[in-house]
Amino acid sequence: MKERIVGQAISIEVAVDNVFAWYRDAGVDEALFDCPLDRFEAAEIAKTNAPPVSVAPGVEAPDVPLQRGGSPRSLPHTMPTRVPIVDVAAMDIASAAVDLAGLRESLAVFEGCPLKQTAKNLVFGEGNPNASVMFIGEAPGADEDREGRPFVGVSGRLLDRMMASIGLDRDLAYITNILPWRPPGNREPTPAEVTACLPFIQKHIQLVAPSVLVLVGGTAAKTLLTRKEGIMRLRGRWLEYKPAETVDSIPALATFHPAFLLRSPAQKSNAWRDFLMIKKKRET
Ligand code: URA
Image (cartoon, rainbow, N blue to C red; front, top):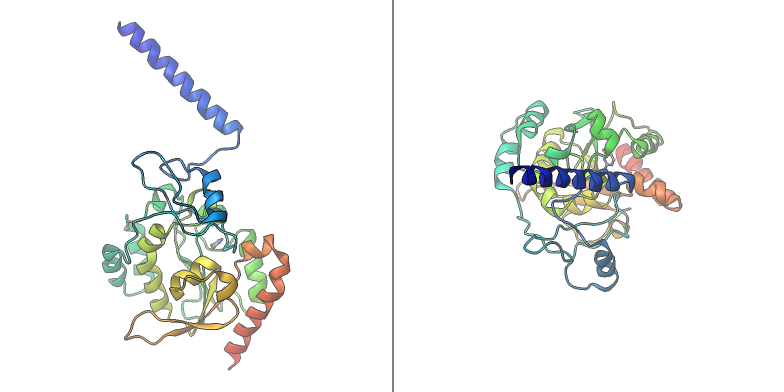
């Protein structure tokens, strides 16, 4: 009997190995979620506004846009999630930080966002902590995750060139992201992940205290402007980031994410117009 059980265990192990080998050969090298997601059904939802995507029985569907970089074609957030308005524990931890070093330390011990478990590094932010312009992107990608620095990959290099075109660089500006950890497979972050980390980016802005915010891509724009419109509607005009009733608002300009511009170069002329607005604002 014991031998039979041992034999079965071995054959299950071999079967699991085969499944992993099959996944690997098919290019599946990263787990994105805790439960399966029917992407065919998700695509149908995007077209028809049909009811929620089904996942394994009893498991809540993740709210999963399919494309990173603030593309206007991202899957709308139609799937159900229980998202708190604000993570109270995160708010307490973030508000205790008195400077950027303290905020980095509090993020390093914060366990309220599951992305931390799959990320290699915390990507906090970099640049001039006294900058008058603060750029905020979405979340680190693979290169940023590896280096622990924001916007260092292909889209980061494009952002550097865009900044240089209006006389900015990382010694003059400050750069960070809504999320400090990379979503696996570079997927767009879920609303629950954004909510978990929101108090930290709010505190980050308060500590840098810029005169101008540049919201790079749809996730940063929608999150910090608390607007539902996509980046196509939000970009190209001065809006206000209002952290709290009692605090002065900060002029904020939303613009296209460089990852989106790399896929849609025809939009570069609009991004150039946005950057000229930033230049003009700095000169006044
Ligand atoms: N995309 C982002 O939004 N942020 C990064 O740091 C890198 C890519």
